[in-house]
Length: 415
Image 1 (cartoon, rainbow, N blue to C red):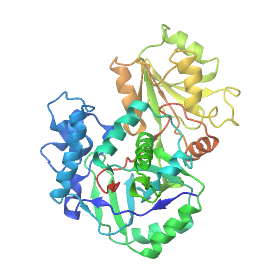
Image 2: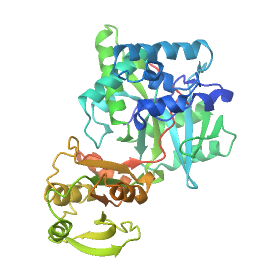
Image 3: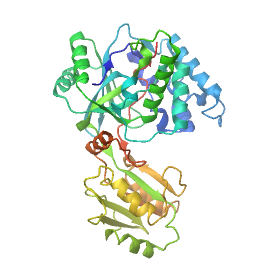
Image 4: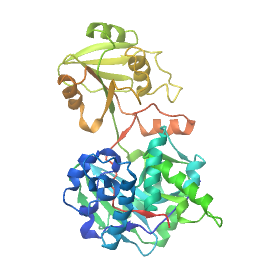
């Protein structure tokens, strides 16, 4: 069963939300955050990217930067830019992209569920990134930003979501960078809150869609606090961390594409010939060509687009990993032909989220920065859940969820 609870959210007043809210800490660098914050002292970047309050070039991992995050978090509360709700609530967070809206429930999930594997992951985490987020949680004693979960579709929860969606939201704005609509409701009704808790208790698992490092950090800090408290009961606020949970069928996963700097010493002709061993290769001309189905890839090389269709026998439909296009391309193209084995560390490859479009792949190759580009068909949420259920881990850089959660709409304090 999945244990969740409502919480006393710390939120900006309605009239300040657009000054406070921001993109997540991990989708932009320090200079982008500095530029977006500008002279807005209420921007959440002063808490989640506090290096912007130091001279250019200051490391985001400098101990003073973490201390500044806590100082700014307190300042925001002292000035009334963030205010804690008087009682516990669940919340609803809706995002609209390209005419499609997805509705998420903002809840507190239990750290024990993460530790026990009931909150399931599909990516490996890096210890250095975990430690960075742990320091941020510790110094603020709060989950400043939520993680992004998926849950199996649920008619009872959907009825509650749609009922609140028909009412006026607490927040409603178009974000300046992504151009997407973001809406937020507060659930006040005790009966609705109990129903939500009960429905989640029936679920054997929740699934991390995005935010693996934040999930790990929150759970590890919770475990630390358990050990430090001789009177630990299991109901303390530090046992929980904030998540936005969406029905799996509502989520949009975009393609996550690859660009490579060289062809491992081969000419274009030799590379195309090597591809023909495992793929049906077809020249599609100079117009941008997008993969049309699973196991089809688009290659951009020498100002031409090619369709690459994986031949029968090159993948295993009974293996939740082996059937993935990210695995096929990693094994048969990047590793076997281009000798790029470790996608996490190789300097010969880069990754481009699908929101940028295939035109971005073309631009980076045509500029001479990259030699070739490979576009993939998007992974499905069902594939992610199947992999998580099997206890396996997806290859690196396999999923790109859009829209991203905006930060600063609500914060969870650990005490």
